[in-house]
Amino acid sequence: MTQKIILGGGCFWCIEGVFNRVNGVISAVSGYTGGEDANPTYKQVCNGDTGHVEVVEITFDDTKIGLEQILNIFFEVHDPTTLNRQGHDVGTQYRSAIFFTNPKQGEMVEYYVQNLRESDKYDGQIVTEVKPLDIFYKAEDYHQDYYNQNPNQGYCRIVIAPKLEKLAQMDLKDK
Image 1 (cartoon, helix red, strand yellow):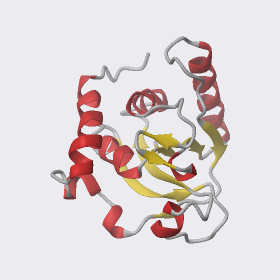
Image 2 (cartoon, rainbow, N blue to C red; image 1 turned 180 degrees about the horizontal axis):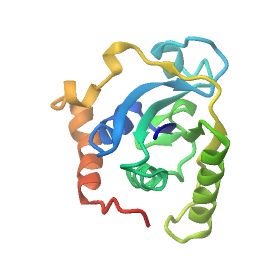
Image 3 (cartoon, one colour; image 1 turned 90 degrees about the horizontal axis):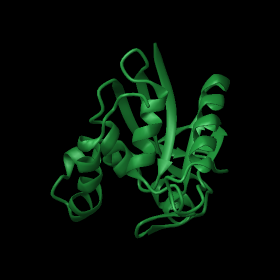
């Protein structure tokens, strides 16, 4: 069965680049959600004018990869303890966020995040927001499949490539 979940963990190019390589993921689409303005542009979101988060809409086949595996990957490739930032990307548009698409998914995500908060996996407090999806706005076409289109670009080499290396080293079995 096909499911969707929307993940924000810094620049959407990073999250999209990772999930485009995961078996069972049908698509990873960069976009925006969580803000006030309808049909925001990249410039508006980057200026912090809309309240939106840069996110990736992950469509996956849950007979090939489970939600827990999706969350395991997500929490390995970004830092859920930094409020409104990932590395040098700073602003509310880079906050750690999960937008679920149905109540059962929401319960699973809340349970997963609560278990992480109670664990000693991270030194800092987990600040990932968990909310139901209101509306997803697809980002401009030049943001789609960004890493694959620009693998030699500086940001891709310095920021995204290490996340891909981390993904390659992961055991993707449900834990």
